[in-house]
Length: 199
Image 1 (cartoon, one colour):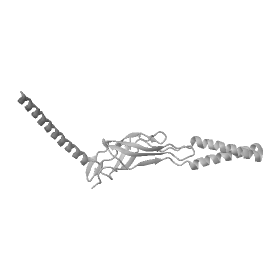
Image 2 (cartoon, helix red, strand yellow; image 1 turned 60 degrees about the horizontal axis):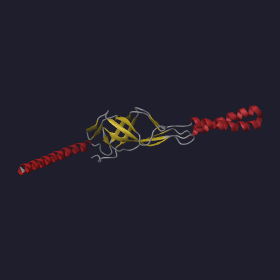
Image 3 (cartoon, one colour; image 1 turned 180 degrees about the vertical axis):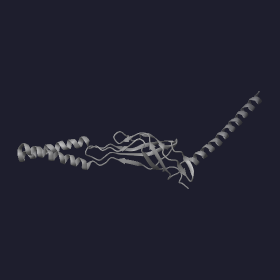
Image 4 (cartoon, one colour; image 1 turned 90 degrees about the vertical axis):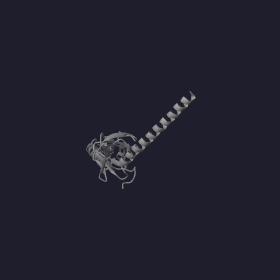
């Protein structure tokens, strides 16, 4: 009886060893394939954004779906086909302020065809609205001075100019925001900064 139990235990031990060996061999094969297909450092990857990004609503850490726009080819071997899924991550977003700097949004590649990657950053910046604001403020002052002058001459012109300046500033504050926008379907190119160097 004891001999039979000992034999069973030994068979189970041998079976577990065989399973462990097979699993180890399988992992070696999987890792070898993954390493061979990893996008090397310095490779350019171009993707098409799946949705619109704006500095007004984007948040740091947000991810957006994308698709690979062109085949990723290294030394004649296609590592990723065009149309494969990708993701980009927002790494910086700043909304435009009134009478302040324009908005900025920055993204990096987060994954390509299911594999995590890191990449260089791509940024978009809203147009500067400083000149526009100055024009609106100046225009408001001039209009106010004209109205004031018609109403009461010199003193009226000064009062009108002050009122016009305030009105002009109000217009600039209400409409002067210039957000950075990356439209849906727009194409963005990145350089991979993870993985082994290209050889």
